[in-house]
Image (cartoon, rainbow, N blue to C red; front, top):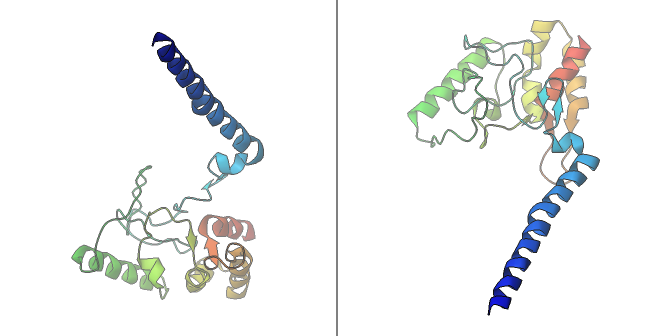
Length: 191
């Protein structure tokens, strides 16, 4: 009986060492060797390309910065960027929520104040609050605002949006998207 217990404990320790440590380290090593940019969070000069973030976005004075393109609003407070890292998740406001209705109306008013006829995505939050992408229509809706603020012609901005538009994955999964961080980086270079 004692022999079986020893064999069982030895087998458990060997499997823990192999599957618990060696396999994990091997996976991390392969990810770092072949996909280090993605494994380290896709961090560029201006932040992560896979996490929605502000680019001189909603200011604390509740006014959109018209010089840049904007992504979907922050679920915590759609009119103010709270600047607190780690906050993610939906606001859990249902379609009959008065808070949601007030937030959407305030966002529509803010967009109209800077000369944009907002799309649905520009006034509603994403499920996670971390979506880095908008649709090409969302970006095109912001062109008059950005053109007026920067002096760049709408035609050049449309060409920039077209260049930064990524088609569906594998050519058929999902829809076309524009990464807001990459679009604003390209806009900064255009200036």
